[in-house]
Length: 276
Image (cartoon, rainbow, N blue to C red; front, side, top):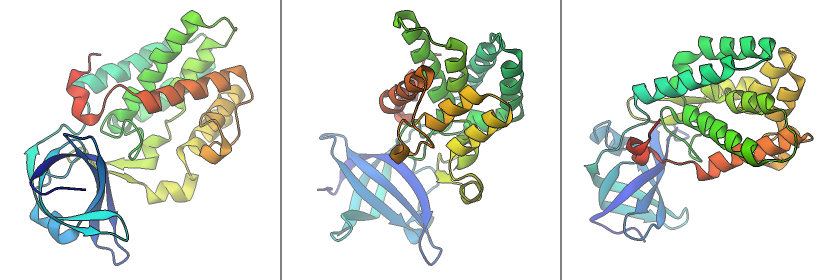
């Protein structure tokens, strides 16, 4: 049970609105001593009384008072104070380095058509890509998180290439690392100041998910094999994939993406230790 006058870390922060259009924030609080997590919410009047930097992913707060809603298994926080502020994401310098690595990797491709198409997509969306999150709450959910996830996929791929005996199209897999989640640039809206992440209603109405965006981009450019990898990279239809993986590259890439998503190196409160 959540305890008064104890310190907790904020996780999986989501800004939302009630049915009557009032602002709210939903998140989990993790106990620093036990690691247990508690589902919490704060309402508009509470939000208005706090500085913008108080409720952010990774922040440590002291819970002074709350009300427990047993039917929702949720704690409504009524008074709290900031103990330690966390960064909202990767530094601009780190994001620049990660972005340049994508450009360098793409420039190494032998397929000129593929190289040109990816470079064009990266270049026209450079500013957005550098702030984008890889998820709303599941993994790499902070400013620059998408860049880190993509680069982790590249790292994992290159390590696997060293030990796999089966012949695979390495360039195709590296291209999938870079392009599979580019739709997330538009799927999520990220506040650079607070780190708040929200799904884009406009994107949801147009594309359903980032997978449809990436599949459409690859397919319209004539990259059929890449389109299949993007369409299937969640592994199963009931996990959000359009189709299930049918090629060795698609099956391998699903696991590469899954490793990064589940075992990604850093939370937002740990990013100061990132060495790029």
